[in-house]
Image (cartoon, rainbow, N blue to C red):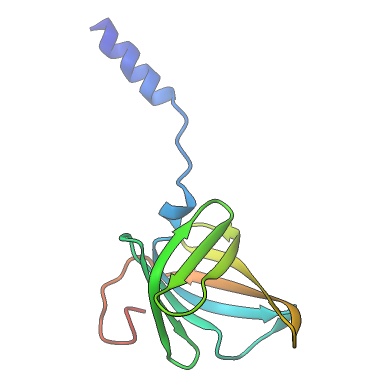
Length: 135
């Protein structure tokens, strides 16, 4: 009986484990604001992003074009690897279960270095409802 009491005490005193970014990133994300080089952008960048538990993602841009593929994340970045095209790396600034602040850094010979900030809200895991893809 004493063993059970000690075990219960040890469990109740243990500090909770912080969920990993891979656990917090799951869900249906909707972009609320986009900033390109510090300026508000209204355009065809990321609009919606669904991150599935099975490692797949669906991304819709502002033109309604879908990209699908696989994702991975660590404490610093979310990487989206589409079935066609180049991987997208979103550096994590802030990430909770309900909101995310991500930065994408791009470089091109014409534009030079460009920084894009996405402020997103997570709607959680939702069913596909025929209206877009669940948002």
